Length: 219
Image (cartoon, rainbow, N blue to C red; front, side):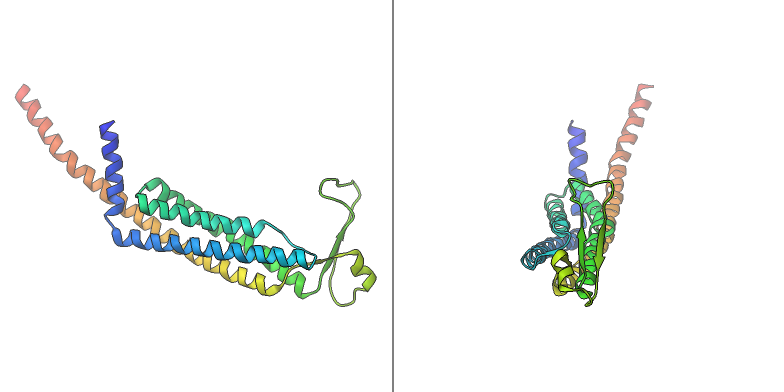
């Protein structure tokens, strides 16, 4: 039990052995938190404008992604503050999720919103998500050639492109933050691992010599 506690304390000391790099990781985590809060605000604004103008968009998707960015930053701050390697590793993993899943999700959904809004697209379906018949259809019509009667039977697609353009810009910034965080955090963990191994080797070497002397005396 004591040995395990010593190992844990040494692991925390190994993280604190590079204070400058830990400080960089902490600043990046703060950036993730700030971006997450800003993106949550703009995502909620986009949903509000969509409901006010009676348009259809993927409501809730961008809020979930933005909250994940905020949570990523909180985990990173907790890892840097407590010097827990598990939290730092979770911070690294969550940044990888942001790079490959959540940032592309925001960019794709916002790009569709901009495309539909720019081209004045309208859509309709003759089924509901809770009750999909065997023979059903959906159609999307774009352009200025739609009659007033067609528009009255359909729903406008997309949202104000200015809000979506801001979301795409922030998502790209989050992508850059995540890539930089992965590089810095991975380097920090590798450096702390090497210093921890050197520490263990330096402490184990005298013990081995003592054991040899005892074995010689017993003989």
